[in-house]
Every structure is written in C-alpha cells, then in structure tokens.
Image 1 (cartoon, rainbow, N blue to C red):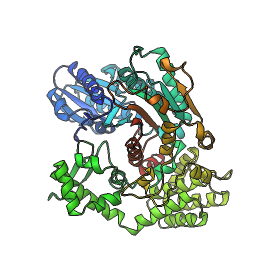
Image 2: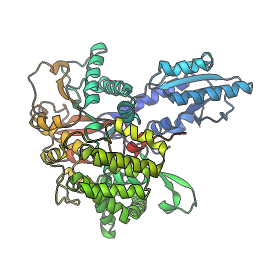
Image 3: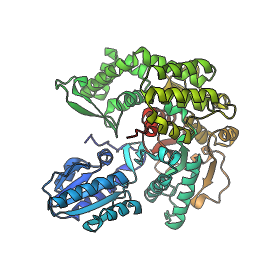
Length: 576
C-alpha cells in the first residue's frame, strides 16, 4: 500500500477523521477473535490504503486477500468480506462460499458492507442460500482524506449512475458524508448549490439535520463557513480537456490512483526489468507539494540544474528530486509527440467555438484512423457540448462512422452518452459563446510561469467550474444569475442552523471577518463536486486560495478524482 498522506497541515483536523475510520475498522476485526482472512474488494483496497497501513492490519492477526471469482486460498477458519454494496461482488462472495462448501471446508463468514448494507445485496445472498451462514455488518466509511485539502467519497460511478441509470443513491451518500463532517466541525451555515444533484444534496442535508441534529453550542463558530455544491454536468467541458498541470498530466498519462502511480521500475531508473513499482504522490513529498500545481512547461524548464540545486537545498530532498526528474522526463515523451500537441490545438479550437467545420473534420479523421475510442469520445463530447449538439445530418453520420470503426457493440456506449446529454442532436442555438465571454473562460497571453489567473492550468482556458466558485466566494452568485440560468440544472442558496434567520447574504466577504475562526485561521469553504473533479481544477482552487486578499481556505470534497479519460470510460459498454 502507498504511503499514507501526512495530514498535519490540513486546515481541518482530518487526522481525527482518519483515526476514527481506522478505529472503526480495527474494532470490527478485534471483535472477531483469532486469526482471520480479510477479503477486500479490489476497488476498496486502494481507498483503505489512504487510511490504514497494512502492517497495522497484520498486527491484528489479519491475512489480506483480494475478492475475485477464484476460490479463496487461506487456512483461516474465519473469513471477513469487506465490500461495497455491488451486485457483482455478491456473486463473487457466493461462489467463494459454495466452493468452500463443496470441498467440505467449515468456516465462519462475516460480510461487512461499506459504507452500508442494501436490501438488494442481502437478497442475492439469500437466493444463493449463503445468507444464513453469515454474520452481516457495516463499516461506515463515507470519507477518505486523500490529502490535506482533498476528501473523496469514493463513488467512482456516481456520474454515470445518476445520468444514465437514473440511480441517485450517491446523492444520499454524499449528504451523509457531509453530515458526518458536521458532527466533527459544526453545522455549515451557508450552502450554495448548482445543478439537479447539488440542490437535492442540499435538501437531503437539511432533512438529515432535522432528523439527527448536530448540536453546536451557540458560542461556537462553525469551522466550515460555506459549502459550495457543484454538479459535474454543469461543466463537462473542463474534464474533457487535457490537463496541463504536473499532477494533472501524471493522471492523464499514467492514471493516478488514490495518491500513487504504478509504473515500470526502469522508468524510475531502477535495474529491475519488467517489475512494477508504486510511486506515492501526496503532500508528504515536499518537492511534489511545491511543483504539483505548476503548469508542466514550467516544471520541465525548472529542470535547469542550478535552479533545482537551490530548490533541493531549500527542501533537503534528494530522493524526491531524482523521482520527479524521472517522472518529468517520462511525461515529456508523451507531451513532445506531434499527436499530443495537435490534440491540444484542437481542444482550444473547439473551446473557441468559431471553426465548426475544422473541428468536425478532425474528429471524422480520428474515427477513420481508429484512434483509441476514449480519445475520440472526449473530443466528441467537448464538441457536442460547446455546439449544443450536432445538426441531425452530421450527428447521424458520425454515429454511423463510429459504429463502423469500433464495432456495433458500441451502440450501447452511444446510447449512454445520449442519455447523459453528452452527445446529442442540435435543437437550439448554442449559448457557449455567451457563457465563455461572460465568465472570461479564454484568457489570451496566459503567463504560465507567473500566473495571475486560474487559466494557467489549461494554458489559456479558465475552468468554468472554478470560475463559478471564484464568483461564489468573491461577490456571491447574484451578479451572474443570468449566466447561471444558461448552465444545466437549478441553483439555490440557503442559510442553515442559527444563521437561517439572519439577513440575506449577497457576499461572503462581508461575513468573512466575523467568521474568522477564533485562533486566527482563515475560515473555510468546502467545495464539493458531485460526479468528480480533475487535478487541474484542484490546482486552480489552490491557486485561488493562495491569492492575496482571499479570505478563505478552500478544501475539496469529491465523489472521485476523475479525468476526461476515466469519465468517458464509464460510459463505454463492452458487450459480451
């Protein structure tokens, strides 16, 4: 498991949050006496690696295994399944138990659902006649701190489930996670929400507060002053663009998973042919903390030897330096390819929304060359959103060409994208140009080395989502009301707790001075992305937070950290 992030500098006491999750898991294990085999669903494994060290589990007499369809290899009599409530995982558990029974093995089984049990899953266990062999429980893990300013709810399919399958259970889960935070840090007095899902989460949160109130004494100033909830569908342009920050590019090219990347040892200069190693990426690595949010161009230029030597002297971090020189050199092999540069060019042309035919032909050519499907879908989604859909003739044509090139099993993929509104026929004129101008999304002459605007994270495009956050914390959303109406979904602003009766608040700044937490720290804004956030957007939020005159620290909550690749991938159906 990768190195657990150090949370000592977090603006909230996230260490206590993590310790609570550790304690809850260890209590489950302590109550099952003796040696036991802990069988974890693989997706959950990477979440747990941000919370607890493997060595700590072993101290509690635990053998670790990953859940799969294969028979379980262990001598332990007690088997503890730790799984998310998903139907395919239930089938694996049943086949494991049936396999044991057929071999005449007698074991004790425990199933702990994360974060809660569901009727559907228990029904499957009943139908397969294994339910009565099991002790069922819950491990209420709603929040995983990935870093000192990033919390994940670990719902990697939330966007597709709500947009395509009409399954909004993730919204309850998000509200529950935030409500859990309120028990530790006080009721959040101001809530701003944009998008269908966000407005619902705000409602559910109020209902939870009514049913199970957080009682914060009147004297105490809540630690989180404002909650901003944003649906990913409000801005699907940003994640479809290639991220150009160092951490964003690492994710684009190497796929960061819960704060680490896995790659060939040879890339890191180790002489172990064909061996994979995990490289941790979080703020415990001082050098990474300094460079993660820079535009990659700047990271590559910083590689001049003298600058780096000064840097390393300052930070005392030679092993980290070697690590990042190797990683940066490896990334340069991707970013120097003509195809990469051509794609960036095209992304900017699409965002400019002035040259429809050029963009159309470029995508058509990618399809005919059979470029990787996900790369094509990213550009197609970007194109469809900025043009408010494609004219019927061209829409039908591109669909047909896609199916010819990639196979008819992708009918389901295209239907998913249509259902989610990411690829559609044009029914009205696009309002993208109005939005782009009003929110100043395209910034000419962006200085990536000394940025003065969040547009540096995409070398000239300011993420729409973060512009909305910028307005919310600077002057409220009232001045941009008309633009908000052009974006998907409703929006709402509410005051909660003992603040609900005070006069309406157009700006947060006015209240920021009163809201200073007693010991002089800045007050906090929690920005929650429903459907995922990219590393580039996190960098843009960190940039905002560091600006002079900014009254707030910003922390991020998200269903999952995503990229255009991982988002587009969730819509791809592989039939058979």
